Length: 279
Ligand SMILES: [Mg+2]
Image (cartoon, rainbow, N blue to C red):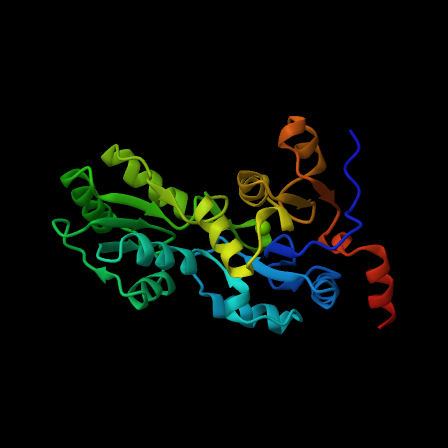
C-alpha cells in the first residue's frame, strides 16, 4: 500500500508533537527549524503539544528556542497547562490531591485549586508521573476513592513510560493510574493529555481555529494521530520516532493517518522549501 504524498498546501494551523517529531532528546531533527519558520512565514499558526507532565510550558519554550525554533510559553500546551485549566473551569471549588511533579502541583495551586492530602476532604485525585510515588500516596488515593463514588480520578496523560536517550525509560502516568485502579476498582474518569478531547479543545482554543483547518503532526499513532482522528482533524505521522511504516501498513484503511512522512520537513510545500533553502 503506497503512502499518501506530502500535502501541497499550507494548513491554517499546525499542532506539533515534540520528541520524535521536531527533536530527539536534545537534538533537533534536520530541517525542523526551517519547517517551522517556513510555515510561520506562510501565515500558518503553530502550536507545540507535549504529553510530558513534569515540565511547564516555559521550559519547553526555552528548549525549543535554544534548539533554533523560537517559541514562547503561549506556543506550548502540555498537561501541566491543561490539567489546571480543566480543574479551574470544571471543578473550581474542588479540593485536589496531586500525585505528580513539582511543576504540575505548582500549576494546580496557581490555578486557585485547594490541595489536601486528607482523604476525607479530597474531591479529585490527580494521578500523574511522580518519581516520589510511594505506598503512602497510594493509600491516600485509595482512602479517598473508596470513601465516595463522587470522588474523581483524573490523569495528565496515559503514557505507559517515558523514553529516555539510550533506550532507557521511566514509568509514566499510566502506571500510577493502574496502581490506583487496581486497588480501588475506580476507573479513570478523565485524561487531559493527548489523545483526549480536553487537549484537542485546548489546542483549538489557543489557535483560534477549527479542527478542519489544522493538521496534527506526530510520531505516535495512539496519541498524536488518535487526537486528530478524534476531532476530525487531518493527521501527519512522521517516521522519525516510535512508529514504523510496517505498523502503519498493518492498520485498517480508516485508521491510517492522512499523511505518512519520512520526516516533518516534508510538510513544507515544495515552493516554500526552495525559497527557504535560498534564504
Ligand atoms: Mg513524540
